Length: 254
Image (tube, rainbow, N blue to C red; front, side):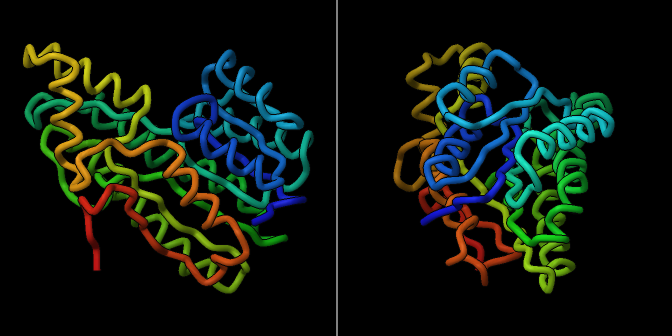
């Protein structure tokens, strides 16, 4: 599989799933621009990927997104692949989910995806390309104590399907990849939260999360990256509007 000559932008590209995706796209020949908030992480990851670039961005700020995408075009040309990976998860009981937390989850996970998509669309409409949104199994089913996050990720799935139909005749595919519990810094934070609130050990908390996967394990970032890479290749040109669960069979949507 080759993406030679393609310019791929990956948000949240400095670590975890985003870093794995950026590495896979780079290995396939794409020129990669990493976007994120942590300049140190972005710089370290860019150093591992010769020829790549990075820009700091706040995905909930329209002006920040506009500047970052303009800089990406200036350094590497028109954008042909966009991976909306930046996201955030916070848990709270429904009654303790105030408007600030609710808005934060929608802003980072849903509005950020829209702003970055909107910024990349001029290039995609002119030249064609791929949009892959990293959602979550929380975009396909409900989970307790993360109502705002679940609502936001369901919104990402809806946005994916709507754009896939609108752009179907423009040589643009739009898909979502929906990981289950994945071995990332985000998961490490969830484990710490569980141990703090329940008194369980880290091993017990990790095992409890892994139990939701019928394979009884955590998903690895590279497994998510492999699915994204396939969706970005010409062989997946007829795949659009899909929400693909990478979760060991936890979620099955017919």
